[in-house]
Length: 113
Length: 114
Image (cartoon, rainbow over all chains, first blue to last red; front, side, top):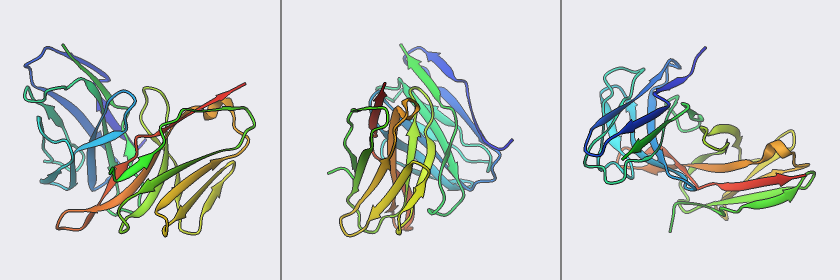
């Protein structure tokens, strides 16, 4: 079955540690996205990539980093510089053009204490 | 002013009611519009695309008004299972490259009660 996988589903970390969230897709989509969602809020764009080896900052990129070495994979690192990292992180992908919809992974719920 | 705005609700309606949500966007160059449904603590899932001529899928009707820059979602004969948050998505042109970036509203909460 084609789809997007994110792991782990729940992640707990101590403050000051970097943590990497996994996102893999087998839909052969060119574009991939990372969003953050806080309780009662909409999705805010962290980073996006429209092609391998290229990515762009979204609205809230500070404290995060990404890589896009393979078409299928777009990992997100939450660094210790991110002031409020506890949130629900969602990865999405879509075929290259804007007329197509995004597909989402199940999300990773990160708690930092 | 936010690029995509929605009334957060909640909209509290009885089963069988008709309910409508609006979503306004600020960039007139926007293209490609979608409605997603998000259940509590789950990922968003596509409900329907929104076409210029309007489109219907069973009890759901989506419309686009480019002149007034809003999209709408109408749900007829509401079911208990329709209770969820409904997110509108607008593809907004961004950056020198002119790529279209999906931009989400904060969502409208719908509660359907018996």
